[in-house]
Length: 240
Image 1 (tube, rainbow, N blue to C red):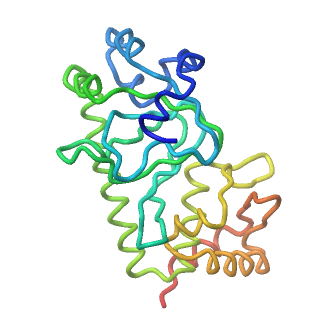
Image 2: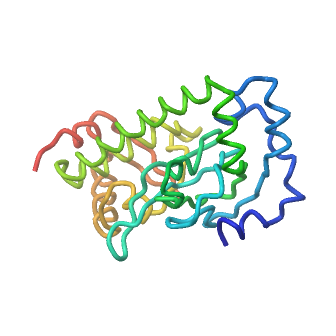
């Protein structure tokens, strides 16, 4: 279930989950515009593993993460995928579908039970026209995302696979922080970690075992803790 099917899913029961204060949209709009957002928003519960929209779907609107974590990913070859980023509370989804193509060039899938807020495309475009701060910040967000994408493409071309996996772990730690047990505050499957690092499940499995043996990381119930930050950083600087 995704896109149109998702929009029809349990809409009435979840309409008022969003607090109109937390997301990229609400925090940057004029206060006078918030009632208009309230009238046009649709808050949708999403199960773990559920597709919010899929690469190639027609663009119907823009989504914002209210609760949970969502992976933004793209097909890479016949049977592989590449995770471009992981969005958490407040983040925007589907903005890559803006423009003249009218099809989402990426997919978004919930990594855990989540809640997303949907704004239809026409209203979102009207919102951009009357909220200059939102438009400016969205432009800056696009610029940052472009730089990050270029860095990731450079890493895929030039960084050894061990360095890419280490870089992925460091990036997750920086973005999501640590739990009380010093674990990275997100649980990813080995396949998702492979997709984030641009490698295979088998390579991630082998390298994670190596990192555990060398006491650079510790793994407890799928939760990964970085126990030697300096050594992990050094791995990102190694060359083939």
